[in-house]
Image: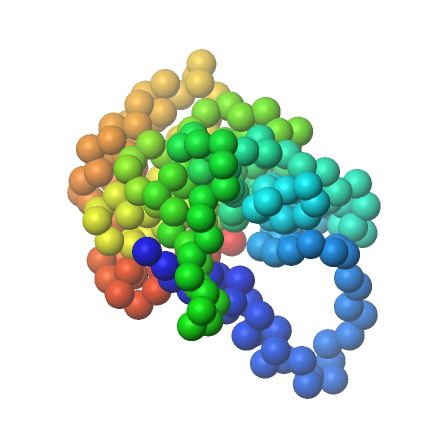
Length: 223
């Protein structure tokens, strides 16, 4: 299964504004390889992005300073990753990875008719520290779970999932990132919502019934 990547939409947006005389002072932060899906930390000091660079065979998650220095990998180096995002505390990240389904890179999709994004069934979303220590998986449903975006004010997470059988937008509401010792009830409610996969469960509800037909977007979580 394949779909257009959210990076393609970003490229079209940048191209549309390229002729605007008010846009200036561009600075290239990465050189060589394939680098994309860069997102700021809340304090504006760092960026998280995905990169395929030697000796990597497919995308892994990297963090760098705002000036492009100190680029270093924070994912496992196994499988393929996409769409990393900082949490509001600047100390934790979420990203999607296929490493739970196998160490090898998934086979790339057929791009003979143009650029498409591979919706690999092994993708799940993980919570990790900003130095790469995985704390726990945030999804465990069969199929594609990726493209997480965090609302830094509310703590809600929006992501794309095939949990319903189609590409839809889902959300996990506030409480899922709370300290485990203090918010056990909220954490269990989140787990119940994900495992049951019922839209009426408020802690993990389906946001879009037809996103798969129109191309699932990486939801803006109301920053």
